[in-house]
Image (cartoon, rainbow, N blue to C red; front, side):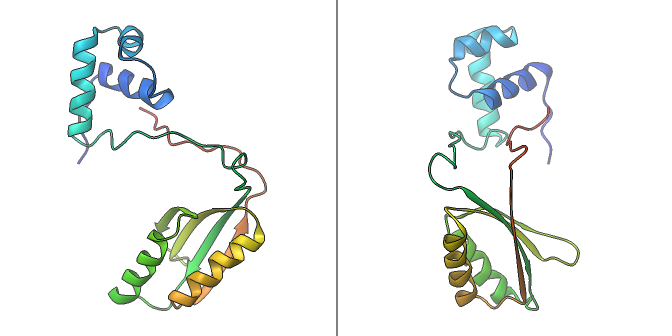
Length: 153
C-alpha cells in the first residue's frame, strides 16, 4: 500500500537518496524546515517502512569485481520445493545482487557481480549443482551506462 507524502517528505527523501550522510541541519536547510520536524518526519518514514535501511554504495570495479553478468534462468520445475531450493541457493550467494521472477518465457533474471568469467563459472557450477535448471543464458555487461537506487519522487 502506497504511503501519502507531502512536498516536505519528498524533499527529505530526495536529499537522503542523494547523500544520507549529510547532517540533519543541512537537510533541514535544504528542504526549508527546522531540524526537529525534519527528524520527526525521517523517524516516521522509517517506522512506516518508506525508508527501509541506510547503506553505502561501493565501487565494484575498484574492489576487483569487474564482471557483471545478467543471468536468464528458465526452469521446467514449478513446484514449491524447487522454488524454495532455488531461492535458498540465491540468498546464500553474495555474488547475486538482484534476483527477479519474471512473466514470459524467462522465469528469473539475476544480476551477478564477480571478478571475471572464471569466477562466474564457479558461481554457475555451484548453482546448477544445487538446483535443476532447464536453461541458463549469461549475458556479460560490457559497460554500465546507468545504475541507481534513487527513486523519482
